[in-house]
Image (tube, rainbow, N blue to C red; front, side, top):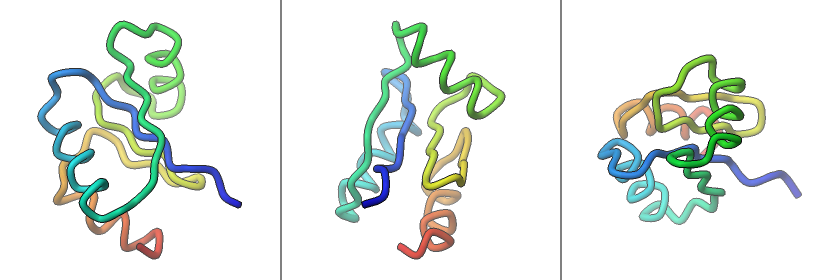
Length: 81
């Protein structure tokens, strides 16, 4: 079984909330990692993505950073979703 996609988010981030709503609406399982107030999670996100903006989605070796739903949809299609 493959690992769940990891979605790094910040609290009060409208793009993060939009991504969560879209993924939930599409029935896609994922792990949410809130980086606000969590230095270790923030470090992991920055190490992975090279930047501190959210949301960041890591899915089986593919990375989507600082995105909105308009970027999320083609990314998901590339993942076969």
